[in-house]
Image (tube, rainbow, N blue to C red; front, side, top):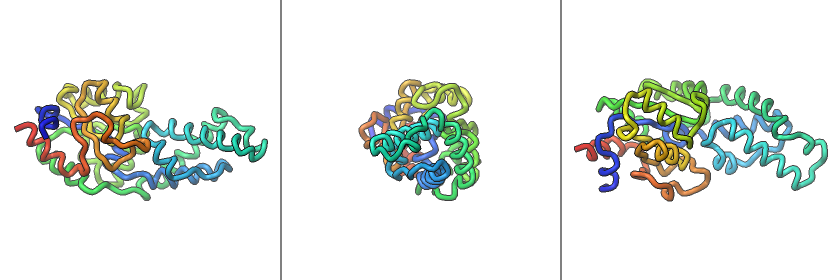
Amino acid sequence: MSSLAQDLTRIEAVIFDLDGTMVHTLGDFQVALHRTMADLGLPPVSDKLIEETIGKGSEHLIRSLLTHQHARAEARKVGQAFTAWSVDALFEQAWQTYQRHYLEINGQFSSVYPGVTLALQALAAQGMPMACLTNKPRSFALALLKEKALDHFFGPVFGGDSFERKKPDPLPVLKTCEALGFPVAKTLMVGDSSNDARAAHAAGCPVVLVTYGYNHGQRVQDTPAAAWLDSLAVLPHRLRAANY
């Protein structure tokens, strides 16, 4: 509690990550990616690999899975016709196919984590300005927030295509703080991964991490943060305690 109080005093605005922090979207990713691989004539990828790869933007996700597929095909020598393609040559088709499938099912196989709505309601009642910053394409994020009835809690909503660089680069955090109108030192980043923490730390922004999200298969508690929360429901109480 002492480190939390020390790091989160005088917080005046909050930035929330989306996937793995507010919404459990793994099911959406799995369905869209399995359909994409089938359309491309590629074998399915494992759900575990998908979970460990999400978080750095959809383009990174697609390219990483294609690279994995190609390496696996080469290792198994399943036939020249299959291994003749290159990741670069197939990427654009894969990206367009994935976008189509994801938009068709966006939100259908996902759910809001317990405690998220309660936290957002409490923070809104306190008059806390809030933004959403995700590496997901902004159009996907806006549609998902609306589907889950979370959109009205947020002012700015930025995606992985909103700026020149994505998290873990600090630029998106700095730009989001600017849009909120608050200094980085008085703006809290709430995320689920080292990606969020690295971006926040580099920007000079305090960060809190949830323990239930997607952190590339690693323990998020090993990532430096002001606190690690099992539920976002406690966040408004912790912030209030830290500020009084």
